[in-house]
Length: 616
Image (cartoon, rainbow, N blue to C red; front, top):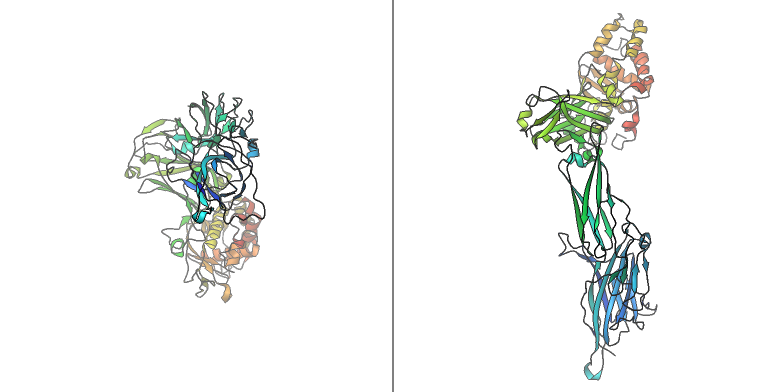
């Protein structure tokens, strides 16, 4: 037998392709003469390039062994094991060899690539069409590993075979180009609507031979590169003497509906294999110094802002009126924190679109000026973000159209801020029509929402966020309804059905005054096990779960709500406002029949009936 010693070294050449003799089905790979373990080397130019080495995994692998004359060796047996990234070889004779390996990650057919069979190392192995005219979809890896086979005499005059393992480090033959952008204002970056690179005449190599040499030439045409969601592209190296150059165009929008187009020239002379090359565009934009926080959808998402009254909110938070309380006439709460952040909290089941926030800050101007614009404010949003005013000097646009420059300010200088909100969203128009707001907060009344049965105490059980959200919907609708002309009309037309507990008539004006007066309610969840499905009076209001979920369409559920509102208004069970026509005929039916006109015009915003956190 022979004893084989492999002496190997890695050459950082380029890609190759070659077919091989497959291991026959009866051959064993337990003791092959040579095992080559494939690893991928990371791109050069990365921070971790010294330690970037990972086991190779390819969608396609081609390899072959050539002798010292570069001719393909055909009298060997070999096999590639993709699960271990190893090539096993048997049948090698004494001599000098090279192992050529070509790996592909991705689908080379998308690049119209052709991998040829090698008979000699100088032949073409990998080839791209001259008119490809696009970046590469797949990544291509290559290595050329020389090794020597020598025969050694064993003890007793016998020759022995020993398996030798060798690591093979694969490098990409392609080059990657990263298009990077430096912005002076983060709100300009998130307001970009389109980015693209238009290339001049650029020529890439199109051929790789077995010895790693590059040849061939693309036709010089390259389609525009869209840089919106993808900013990295792969290419074959530049042909000697060619330059990757062109123009980068950037389109942005601003909060006032205008669009800005800008063009920047660029040029890249070097594009080496297995390297990342960066083309940075420093964007100078007219809105660089704008004070406005332009919260596009992407900008808002980047802030990872939270929401209030969500199912995972603790009872200690959502039942604390210092943390969770709102007036239905002001569901959008705005303030500037002591740290100089704009804080926006929105008590609403619905999203609000196209929102301009203006502010009057005495230390800045005697006028209101534009401060923030939201493409969308999500329902129950809880937004915090540092104001540009405390980060840098800024340009402000006042209501009269003046542009004023404001120096960087301290948070303490923002005291006394007053806000004004504008929106083209029809939903906002409805919210602004709520003139007589009620203050709403939530209480457990002894119940425990963490228990499966709600921890009932007397007629109460633990209210959960799913019920709190529904109460926001109900009271926004109710306080909107009380100022509707149609509502006043139905009361006027049925004035004879309005009476107190002594059956004395109640004037329509008196009823409206009682419904419109300022009130504060602590809202809870009623436990129906005692036969009670609603409780109300003074500052207390509660209903059982089904009524909270069905007030949109169920006239009976509505009658429960208005029954308890009748108690809140000071009436007892002998009046028309509880078991009488006001609660059970006029108001409940008006609510259901006019739901489409209300701010919260559908149960689908909350879909509470299907919420897994409701009581079963």
